[in-house]
Amino acid sequence: MNNILVVDLEATCSDDEAITPENMETIEIGACWVGVDGTVVDRFQSFVRPILNP
Image (cartoon, rainbow, N blue to C red; front, top):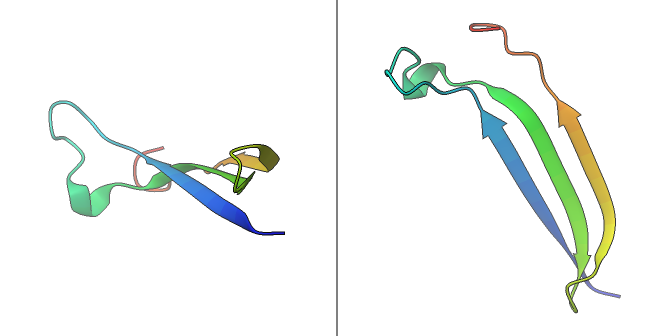
């Protein structure tokens, strides 16, 4: 069986550029295994606590 792993990372950001791209931090990780026919086989989601801009 062939599956595809899809990963999504969410990061801190700001509309006023108070957080520069170099200082963005991961705040959420999402992933799911998807079958070649598009069915979701399994999911994962976890929040991550930022350190620089909590």
